[in-house]
Length: 263
Picture (cartoon, rainbow, N blue to C red):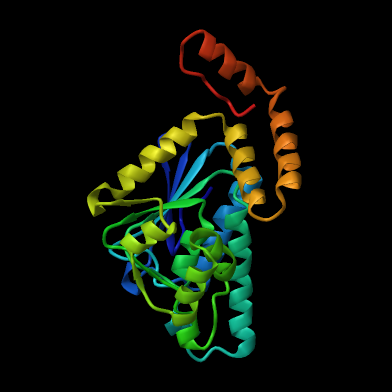
């Protein structure tokens, strides 16, 4: 993976963790076309050739996670230009959602509109006490278009999601935790370490088990339980002949830490 991006930074943490940092602090890390293309490239790369990574952490530079779409760049766009840009964002959403390994958001500050949707598209999130959230699109004559209307009801419930989206009002990190949008609230100086510690725990587990469990959980929110269970069993049975399954059982019986290889 290249490391010469314009709007994001990518960094390997330890051996198996990738840290993605949104890096437009002078623009509140707002998502412009270049950032959309770069995030899409990274997540597509992880889907195609990401075996070396076992967990991804996404955060922002400075005091803001992401202010959403870059409205200054969008000023004066024609309908065609707007829709072309959004098509890039749409593909980026799919790429993030299809990332095989878990994606954890470390929300270091306000996450509005598309920034909030990036948090929702992550597998789960920890947030700083300085974070705030909003889906403000209806106040601008549009609506959430990066799976906000799809993901938010699963996180906070349908009625709460309607209130958040239809008013466009910001809400606190305390409410975000209470409602289920974020898993944990941390002091600003502790946020990234807390997320990385969780990422390290995930990265120590059997990679194929983690990836299949992640996908099975995602399927569970979309289909009935009987067919969801058939998906789970199919994923489970694919793990039985793998070397990591043998290693996990052997390590348990030998009272040692397993050494998983992802095979």
